[in-house]
Length: 163
Ligand SMILES: [Zn+2]
View 1 (cartoon, rainbow, N blue to C red):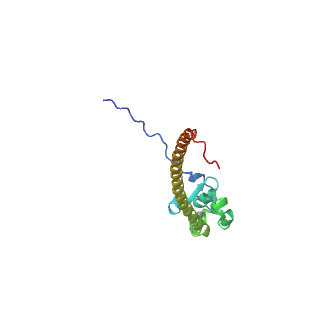
View 2: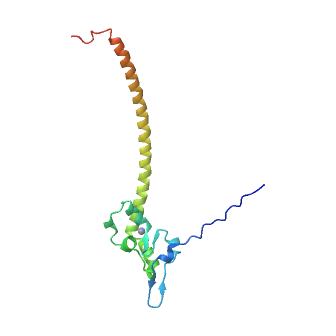
View 3: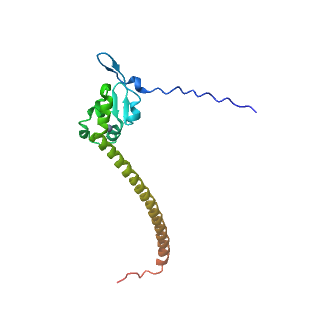
């Protein structure tokens, strides 16, 4: 009994993009983005060289659910990227409670709900159409059959509708 050696998992350890986020230089120290922040704030979207954006906001705007004008106040998290690590936790919390953020979540929830209803309706519509098409094909073949019969019969009766 021979066994083929399974190759050792060659995948290298996942490298997080954390190091590529900008650092914040203060007078006497340099602050870095903390990967652990993401555990508390799961909406954090790390953008290399830029900073942190709000993933929820990004998703809603990518799907054009949110008007850009609605996001005026939260521009750090929604446009140019947040990288003021000194105030990170306070700002994250503030953003999480902001109207923009909660509105984004509401929009996403609304969208996913309406999407599933839409899919259901579409599936129903398709099956209805298929059924209707099947009925139509039956009618057509019946009409064809009757027409053929009728034509054959009509050869004998030429007095139809004479007034
Ligand atoms: Zn947000």
